[in-house]
Picture 1 (spheres, rainbow, N blue to C red):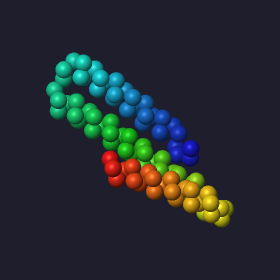
Picture 2: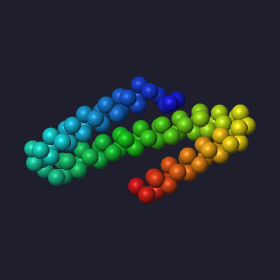
Picture 3: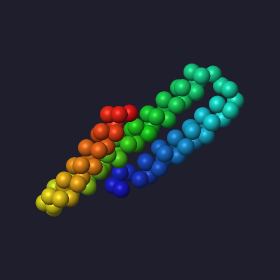
Picture 4: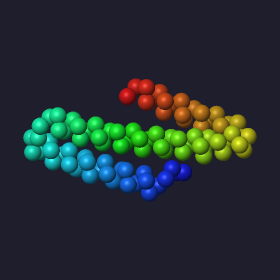
Length: 91
């Protein structure tokens, strides 16, 4: 992985803490809107983390495949990105 590992781990650990908080909120029968706001905050962090990881993949892995003129690896990387875009469109 070429993305900023420390930044990625920090964000994921933040979300883990938020999820633990969400579980407690549900267990404590907290107000629905408060739970929803916390869910949206977690989702936002995950989306931004995913964007950074995908950008890094394009900048490093895909670029390297193109730079090395490895057409089969390049096509494989393009297919991976297409599959991710398809999943994102379904979300």
